[in-house]
Image (tube, rainbow, N blue to C red; front, side):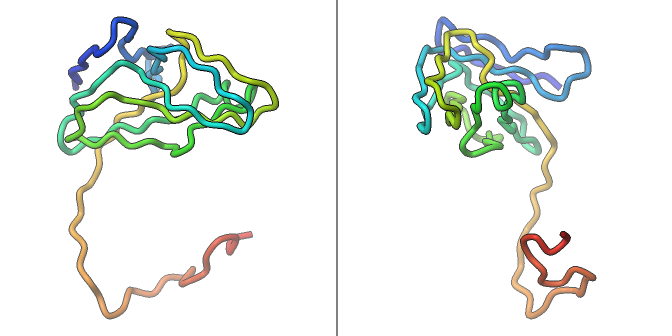
Length: 141
């Protein structure tokens, strides 16, 4: 599969896999920003994608940024629907103690493209039984 990418900003870079076979492709910042501790910032990638129908793009955190600096994606995973053609932006949150600078070209997230089922939904008077039933958060220990 090939995904067409529109470069919206002169600093934009195509998504890039660090290693052959990686599931995620790095997304790079197309703008510089500093994220104060305990705050979030919207960072542009300068890219728009043409995700095919039947697929979706999922913007995932980079584990190294999360572990080393406390940088997380506020709505992880961010969803890029197949019909969206605007700029891919990443909402980053700084849970660390120090301001975190994002420079142009920094790897800020990963993009995973997956096939998605598009079900229809219908109202039901009851649902089938399962072993778990209605047990919610923390019910498995």
